[in-house]
Image 1 (cartoon, rainbow, N blue to C red):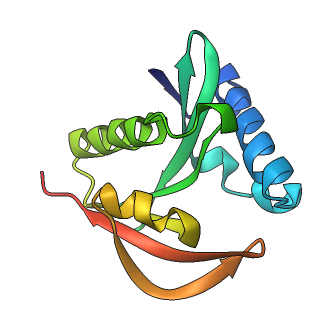
Image 2 (image 1 turned 90 degrees about the vertical axis):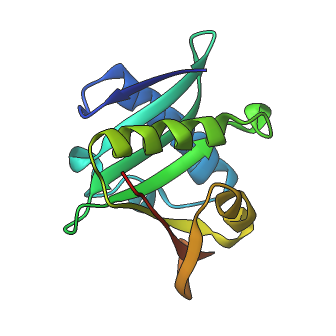
Length: 145
């Protein structure tokens, strides 16, 4: 998988990310568009994984106040799931974070996805919360550089 990244919402990479998010979150999971596309759009870095020039996986992150990265909107198109693309995308993001001496990665994982994130080295922190009608827990991964 080829992974490209951008900080620009005028980029085709960002548009590809939005297309994946629309299909996965809005169409499949019925997340309202006004929740899915939020006021963080312009402050995030976007990552899109491509297979043969087709965008298949995405995620975004932004810098927290205490030098961590908050990862959000991790999604893989349905026909490309269970093929390791989300793991590959997260590994890429983690490697970028390590290069930039980021202290930790944090994300709000849907409870059904917790086993996946546990395998990636994240641990559950805090109480369950509901976002867009979906149960979540925050998960964190400390990075040692």
